Amino acid sequence: MAPPNNAPSHTKPSANRNVKHVVLGDLLFQTWYQSIYPEDLVSKDTDRLYVCRWCFRYSCDADAYAKHTRVCENRTTPPGTKVYDHGGYAVWEVDGEDYKLFAQNLSLFAKLFLDHKSVFFDVASFLYYLLTSTDPDDPENYYILGFFSKEKLSWDANNLACILIFPPYQHKQLGKLLMGVSYKLSDWEKDGGLIGGPEKPLSEMGRRSYSRFWEERIARYLLLHGSDPADTEDSSQQKPKPPKSSRKKHPQEVMTVQDIGLATGMLTEDVITALKGMGVVEPTTPTKKQMRAFSDDGHHAQHLKPAIQEVVRVMNKCIKLISAKPDLATYE
Image (cartoon, rainbow, N blue to C red; front, top):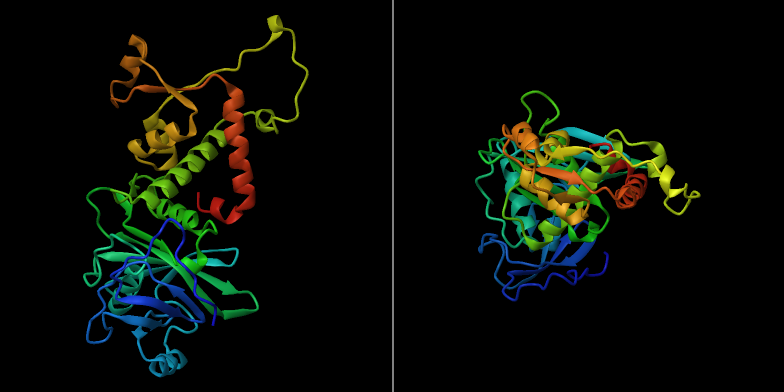
């Protein structure tokens, strides 16, 4: 069994946790928050809770836990339907109505690491998406690394309600993979698709994670949106500067935040948050002609900065990110 995995530096474990540690498969790690496990099964001062890594059933008794893992019906394959498969990772869609006990146990386990999760038992109206990793040499030996959930019907255009990568698997860019899946599942690029985003308000950790994800998503769009391949070369390869009088001014393009949102499947307010974080736009007061052109959507124009070197710098950073994680780009 692996040694205890302490909570990351940004998370201070709550003092009133009812479970101090969990055993998930062959991993032992610390919990962060209290969960509402039934007190007749899990006491208020439980030091170690054993959780099945395939179905999330739980027990305080090591023998009962070991006996269950030998016969768990999800040992060789997760419940639900596979909707994504690439590079050893897969995502499985699980309907909370069809797999009620599984969804409830997963929600109770997730609460040990989420401060604001509130849905535990009313799971029928939610879909759950499990992120799994498979050993290439043993296809039937898989691990659930995390998940996200979404409402089947959201009046607020939410494409994600809750997301968690389990502590032992964090800091591996897996959260971005699940975020990308949540947007792709919205089918925003198709007629009748959904332009959406995560349920708000976001936690501080969620805000930082989504800001990075949105910035990279928009940078990828700008990179592929009619860019000259020569513009995306490493800025370290300097070319001789032509005489000032002969320099060609780089063309500028005017687009609205709504244009970018439609192209990326993002809500307008999320686009604005990302663009401000990237520092590649300058809000301007539209001319009368532009006001007439944009009067239908009601959004002011956002001018791309004329300093093309700044845009290229951001694009080069995005190219490196995409190259390092090709599995993330698959679901963009």
